[in-house]
Image 1: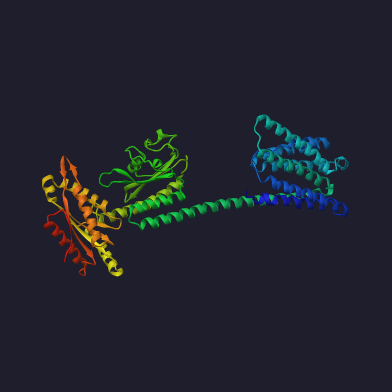
Image 2: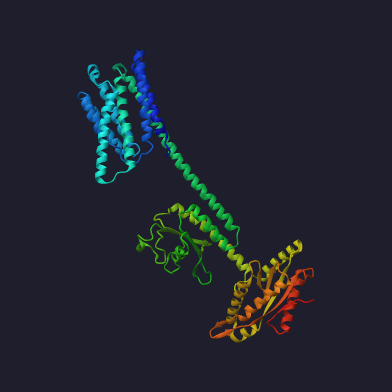
Length: 563
């Protein structure tokens, strides 16, 4: 447990005050000073140790010894001095109620101690001599009161059937603190003659102001620690936002953008699930492009219903924060039927590009009230960066990918082919090129129309993509002609891949409005370095020549180029 300056230095201020009081009280009597000083210092150090022990655990209600102290005062002090102790006990109880749990016992003991000291100082000289002079005797008397009260506490706890080791330990700490603190105050007061009373008050004032100053310094340090914690959290947020922006804006792959959001958002937000939904620019439909949940796929369910959360954010074009999805569902402007029951709070922010909503970024937490306006602004910043990155990726895809077949366009294919050619020439590698043409595709367009032809081309694109390896590249070279780049593949390997692709096309059947659409494919194969003519145009020309050899040989076959 971290102890503040007040807890650390207050007991030692008590030691200083004790020694100073004795020095003021008996400045001329060396024997009395030598006799009283060790006793006072010993009691002060015991009180300091007790205060240190009591400060280790401030939880729980302290044992009230104020009544015991008042009874002892009425027993040993003449009236009306005991009334001072009574009022001190009442003041200590009130102060303990206002103070925090870790200060109540200390506040009560200090108030009663001050009351007993003032009561003794108020006694006339004869009465003061008649008062008990043995500090040990008074400590013994108060210890009996304390132990009796502790026994009553234990009996009551046993009768209730609820007694814990922590409660007993806290009670013993309070007993030690308050039992030692009161005789110490008595001893200091008894040692002071009447002429030293103003000096003692001055010293007490110095000690009091010292403790007040240290308490203020401790509060300032606590505020500074809190401010530093807030600044550290903000620095973490800024670093995370910077990392998110750098990674997302440097990527043209939507999947990488989604993975960055999934990896970085849990670092700065309390979330159990997140989802990224995109809006189809043609149909306006919302589909979930990426989802994640700590509990697995079942906890990542997201509703795209027209009256759901995502649809509302897209329609309103503004973020929303929900503190509790289950307490006030009727007051929400959207339905929560599709949201998992364990979700309690949520944030949803639109992905906006040039005042156009392209998607929604949403997070959920199983804890009610998990988000505030600051976290909503943080997620909004992430959403702005994600929206730009997703839109950049979409524009890049439009410039490089055929919208019908989802294969790359011809210009992009040529750039990648040139890169592969340069790499193979530099490092002595190999690669192959396939030219594929659909046999009889013109008949599909003529007989069933171009809409059915487009549907068949879409299916062909999916068939080709599903047969490629991760490093392979396919493009739509012309209307029904396709070209494939196979890195690190020789002529025999390319012929094997081409044969598998030919069989897949021949097995493809597309049903469209009662019509059955099917064709076959002729494929020509050329490989580097076997068929290298010095430039890429010559390699593509040889693959095209092999394709026409396959056409002339009867179609639906694979033909490698033969010089």
